Image 1 (cartoon, rainbow, N blue to C red):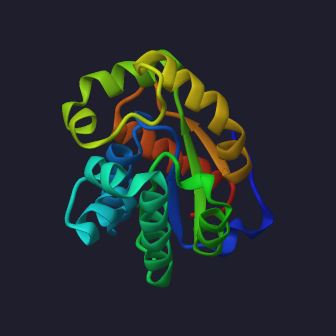
Image 2: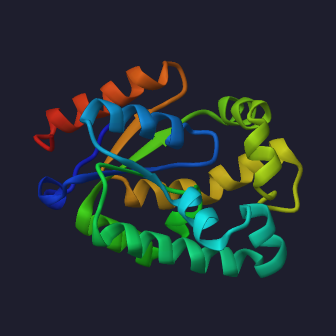
Image 3: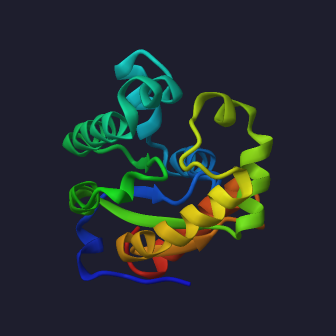
Length: 186
């Protein structure tokens, strides 16, 4: 499935949005390699600037503190946008982030069914060790709830929607480029 906005053609970067486990970081790296440009992950930028893990930020500053840091990272990125931007799953909760990103990037929503997201999250030890639970629910229920809550936000923000559930990251990156080319955006 694909959607487009008239202003997409004026943007040079590609920003990947979607829930944790959708493949934003992995696909972002592949996409940047295909484009021959850099990829910046907002979560990595937040960690680097804070000097502590996302989990520690949530513990010490709460979600509001993390979202403030995330917003700062987005504002930094848009001043000199890279080829590819991989956003944290909750970046779309802040409409200011979405508006700012739209000025410099085409937003691509990576989707996957709940079961695929749960499997990926469970198998990613670094994610579970460095990232907090996002709700008071357990793993499977958390993913379902967040997907239900955030899907309308992802859908509103997305210029292009790509299913990331059943292919290799390199092929998903190629699909994104093909979709953008089909819209005259590459």
